[in-house]
Amino acid sequence: MREPFFYDITLRDGNQSLKKPWQLSEKCLIFDKLRELNVQAVEVGFPASSHMDFEACKTLADKAWNNLVVSALARTVQKDIDSAVLAIGHAQIPRIHVFLTLSPFHMKYVLNKDPNYCAHTAIEAVKYAYESAKKTNKNAQIQFSVEHFGDCENNIDFVVDTLKQIVKSGASVINLPNTVERKRPRVFINLVEKVIDALGNDVVISMHNHNDLGMATATTVEGYFSGVTQLECCLNGLGERAGNTDFAQVAVALYNSGVSVPVNLDKIYETAITISQMSKVPIYEKAPLVGPEALAHRSGIHQDGAIKTKDMEFGAYRPIRPSLIGRDDDEKIGFTSQSGKSAVYEIINNAGYPITLDEAVRLTPVVKEISEQKGELGADEILNVYFDKILNIEGAFELISFRHESSDKFRLEFKFKNEYKEAFGRGNGPLDACLDALKNAGFERKLSFYKQYALDEDKFGSGASAMSVINLIGHNGEEIIGRAIDKNTAKANVKAIFNALNQLYK
Ligand code: KIV
Ligand code: ZN
Image 1 (cartoon, rainbow, N blue to C red):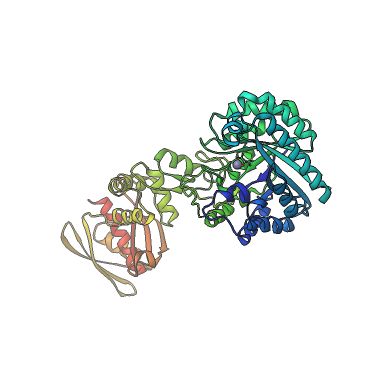
Image 2: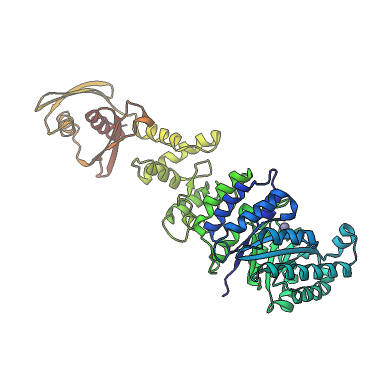
């Protein structure tokens, strides 16, 4: 399958739509980003539009890397073409991009010219551009765009005939813009296919889709599969009105469709952030692929699927592995009243605290209820519930104090059902000694698991530096998980035993 040819228009169509078009230094920075992405062509600007843009085009033509096509826009007037040739003619592969409308509506109501006049103007302009660009640089190429090609349904035969002559006059690329997206993709692609059928063997066919109805990516991707080779795209979908076709979306959609995409996909995410900062056009929260929310899951069903497939290449609820575009592989699990136990389990586990699925099931209704009032809960808020519900379990036992009175005498004071008790035990450390004292007081329990975790003091205050997890065997042989946190590691152990006992004796 042929490779798509990515023609980037961020520095021209994107730039012309900005509230503050870029200065030379900014254009240079973006040009470097385009190099990192490895696009095949860059439309560097519209030299006749301003002195600043002329200078920028000239500088970027100097900065072009090997084999890059450097393009500059020109209307079908000599002064624009001269300016474009002067600005970029010295590039390794300069391309003069001449455009004129052939749409019946536009010719009549905007230009106030008849079709034959427009056809003649376009043909002559391409001839002129070809001759003067070739005089400057034998590698020069000419691209012709039919502005408002999408509005040419009623005169498509005339457009095709004109394009044939334009190709004879020297254009090697015919660009077909959907200058204003008015209809569904298939209607536009039908028109494009008429041009491909007539000219497809002689020239490169290109597409330039605006996004007025939000279907520019779909049109461009399907256009490629209909035979279009050059895809005109804009970083972050910048461009006039609702923008142009989004570069990242097209590149990734083609990649996902099995096409060999000649761009460095892993640069997409960082480039999107840079472009957003430089254009002052924020990335929409829900923007596909690069939006802050594009990897967030809040419904319990989606969270469950996302968590189960998070380490897999193919994810249950994502189109790509985020690292494909240089994004961290961390699908966000946000907890709301719509979320479920998998989220509770994952959030607490990710924060570094032990939790079982059963405990997550127990906590879920509690956090859901809080979330019904507050909306999305942060990890800290969920952890607070975890500490509250898992650590502060009320029951029949109440620890009063404990002390090692000598190396083999451990004294434990506690209340059981409000009755004061004093017990003594022996053991290697407070854990063994405490269990021994409890046995002597008539509460024998077997230990099946013990682990102590260091806690983040910043999060839980200086009163909490260790968490003990102590599993005791319950009345029917089941495992009871006891947990406690304390600054004092011995106290964390004893409190954890009482936490487990309180689950056994309510
Ligand atoms: O949208 C458009 O028609 C254009 C042309 C100049 C290619 O930007
Ligand atoms: Zn455009």
